[in-house]
Length: 106
Image 1 (cartoon, helix red, strand yellow):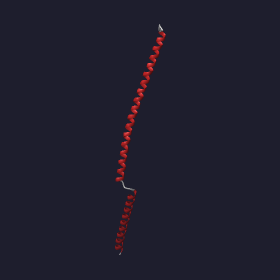
Image 2: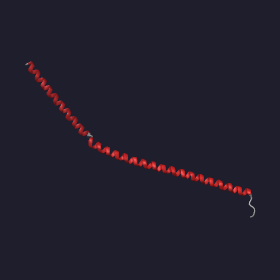
Image 3: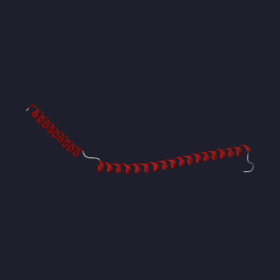
Image 4: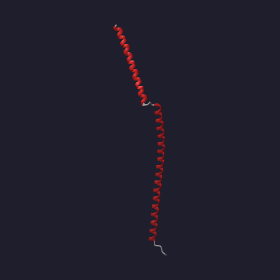
């Protein structure tokens, strides 16, 4: 094993440099992938927090609507009462105007 040939040594050094370059490139890509995954996790956590905020807001709004808005049945009953009151008022006006006409005619 005596003499090392310069060509073989140059080939070995070239191979080692190429291999080291490939390792650095793979390492860089892995770091970028980890960074991207970390950013995606942060975005997902932020979205999850926002979803929970919206769920609370929606629940609060549903409670407000249930407390403040009238139901259809209540609104229908109110409409019926108003129509009946208007009809009674109309009947009173008709009676009053009819009585006034009969007094003028008589």
